[in-house]
Amino acid sequence: MTEIRTPRLLLRGWHDDDLTPMAEINADPRVMRWIDDGSVRDLDDTAEEIERWEEEWDEDGFGLFAVELLASGELIGCTGLSVPEFLPEVMPAAAISWRLGSQFWGQGYASEAAHATLEFALQDRGLDRVISISRIGDTASEKVIHKLGMLPERETAHPVHGHPLRVHAIDLTEFQA
Image (tube, rainbow, N blue to C red; front, side):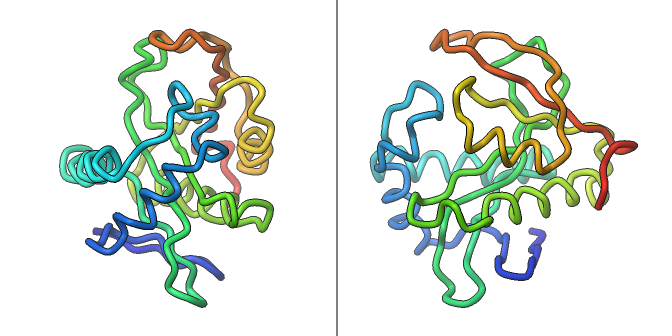
């Protein structure tokens, strides 16, 4: 699996000892507020999620990276690409996303990890276009999306949970490495 180093982060594959810290991130209602239906996830849910992310790497050639602080080796969350099959109207597509522990918010880590992931998608994996799907009202994610140079493309509703979503996109010709 690919590893990506940024000035402060290592985006890498998942290790067995990542389960507990990722489960702690998933158990934080502030982190999960804007994800799916907003429910927190327990250790078993997190293990299933990581297993699914690893399978996506095998099936799609991309998936979600574990995000580690280079200075400490601490897992701070995840970022990466997935196929948003839950939203058929945007298919075919690869969507970029991120999830960091709340103690790591406001330090530019999400933007740094997301930019490295976008560059990986467009330059390494040869994708022509990447989207990001955010819940309307998630201003922190919207800031990261705008820093990536992505532009609003459409608004829709989550087909299961019903909350409003905004889809942003960028293509290879618009990307500034």
